Image (tube, rainbow, N blue to C red; front, top):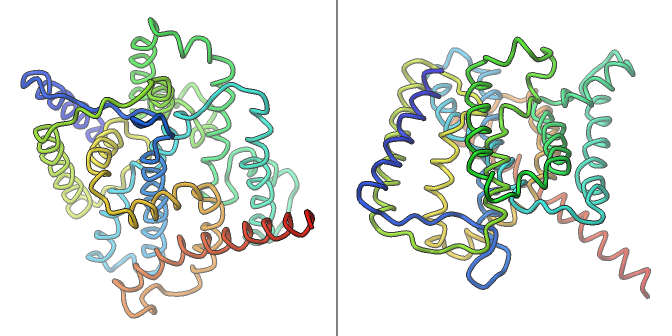
Length: 356
């Protein structure tokens, strides 16, 4: 609660600073100046995907070495730093949503079908006493692996978009809908809605992320970016980002606070900060993160299997905690990408063979 309210206060200070000094601000939009898809959102998804892995690595290290407070507090700091990841996924997923023919066919092929297959396989691997009722429950609420909750959460937003699309895109209502969604999100984060919702639904509650979804819809309806960010805005972003980093260090090292995924302000700060500096990335780094972002759903569904099997191996066995962390991160991101490349290559060869 304190972190949520602190974020709101800092956001208010940032808005006042921009307003008082008349500093121009670049609002992210789904197309660049050449009217092409804005790849910076794919890069953001790449950052978010790596962040999700970092959150789970902290749990992995804590499982083996809960008493090693120095290491655990550092992995906790990295985990807290990455708590922008799920909100950014929700936001970027909403940006390119369009109501068109084949809407659910695309979602079925690229999300529902892989999720179903991975859920069944994961259930058979992770659990011993099989139960159809339990499998169905775990499937509906995304409980086969902890991070799987994201899929039923995302599917609810896809349905919400279809139902409320005409209302969400009305220009006159946009500011009020955005304000309402922000208020609902904050109230949900403070736990005030929990008593009105079934306990099982808490983990996949759309109210925890509804502001980011509505913000994504708003960004997605803009025509093109203005590219008017200034050196002053970059400097102020650095100042506020530094304040957040210092606060994260204090929360992580002094209090051992494990932050939640659905704070409203922190992910927005991260998005603005990264957005203003993406143009300074060299092409290799930008393309790497963009590729990770494009493969994010596949990595998201596969990496829990890897981290699950790694729970039988002490991370310190990989040449100590530092190299153990790096190796775990590379393995959980790199191996799913490698499998994805092999599958895509197989599909290409199969199609080429059929054509010949």
